[in-house]
Length: 83
Image (cartoon, rainbow, N blue to C red; front, side, top):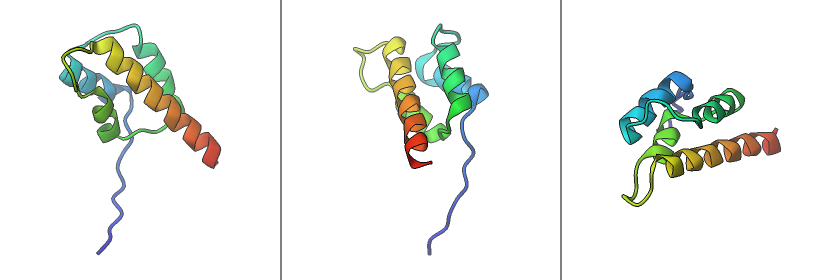
């Protein structure tokens, strides 16, 4: 049986919770860019967590936030292309 589950999309409030939990960051200069992109596109909390979850001790929070911004920009572009 297939069921379609509607999930809410991540907004800045939940982004702050995820980034604090995964990276231990409460404030960062790149939060402004993330806020803007979250207003322009949709990303689930699970997708957001996947981009913030540390995969290596060699990378810092800057690298994860940059990766998240790239993922949000890609999601924005995908929506634009398919619209």
